Amino acid sequence: MRGACAIFFCSPSSVTVYPTPLCRARLGGEVPGLDEFTMAQEWVDQKMEKAKDEREKRGSSSNFAIEEEEDELERFPASVVGSASSHGADCKDVIISSQGFESYADPNEKPVEVVLAKVNQDSAAYVWPLNEDEDAGFFCVLDGHGYGGEGVSQYASKRLCEIMFTGENGRTQAWKEDPAKSLVMAFLEVDKDLATKKASLAKYGGSTCVCVMMIGNKCTIANVGDSRFVSGVRDRDGKTAYYDMSHDHRPDDKKEKARIVASGGWVATDAGDDEARVWLTSKQACGLAMARTLGDLPFKAVGVIAEPEITEMIITTDHEFMIGASDGVWTVMSSQEAVDIVAKSKERQPNQELDATRAARELLVAAARKWKTDEGGEYRDDITVTVIKLPCFPAARAQLVRNPAKDSAAEASPTKGAAGRRKSTAESVERRKSNLAASKKGGRRSIA
Image (cartoon, rainbow, N blue to C red):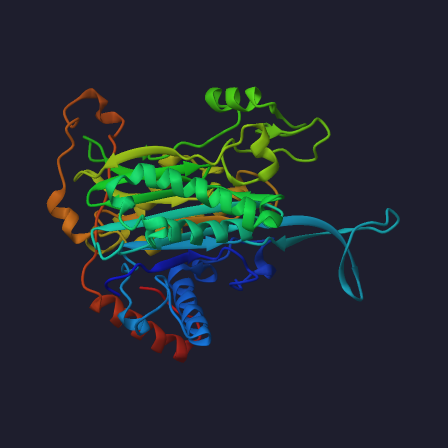
């Protein structure tokens, strides 16, 4: 779709809006197979159908409405940008009665421990092209938390894209003129909107948000919370090393803690928990595990802020891919472990060409397994992964530059990087047609 921006929601932000397969029967046992997770392509198709129906009902369109036939809507091929998302799982003591599961309350009754699917509070999206510029794209991953956190992450992902790219307040091209300033202003405006328009959600819930603005071969990264973008970069030995494009905002970080304490809050670990949290009062039931978030209105009074930390990165020929993920990944594995999984996925493909969607699925499954084996028990956080093959914009390939630090000792820690573009839509159109035909025949849909 030329001449407009298109939002693609890569993962479910709320099961009440996008019903996700729960795989309840297997949550307590073996990790579900790859085909049991809801993949990006399916969510994109559902979103487009929903947007088309809503537009027809109201008889109007917006910058983000579907204005052409589905098969003509431009988007990245699944091999270039792929995403996977899965709800978490939790254990609960219940009493099984004729009415089904009931909360455990009677001490005389023997409870049964069951594993239940959690509401998926993660959200992810990308926008491409940006106001007719096919050498520019925007990617974000959000992780909601608290009561109604799925609503916060869903609202924030959509609102952030609207503020950045629909020209509100006359800022049509501001994202291109000064990406860093535009991102900071958009984050703060989203947080303000949550306080004024979605206070019922933001009072008890909030969300992380990490996003990458790609313009040519330059990336501008904005982050609040502990979701993270990393890049896989070839080092001088030919191995793929990691580079953290964003930094987690932990309450016990020296800079973050100083601001919180100066604002009247306090940072401490809870009994039986080694994770530092922000607390309002000594009688508070649960603290906040991040120093920067969207929403979480009560914590704004004690130094938790929505202003994002901005970093920049230039893509060189050494950069192979980027990974954006919620802390369902980063809690159980390091950045290097995640990069290794994607790199090995690439090595297994024909001609060693990375398939972004397959790599995202494999990383998700690996994280789910580590929750069970490393953390112990049945609890698992929501997991959302986006993998971006570099370069993803065709025109960016001509702009790639060699890494100036290639011959220096600092090469062991890869330098910063940025981005790419896509080919004709014909391949992706044919893939969607064949997938649709296959799904009608066999029931389950495959994603090439």
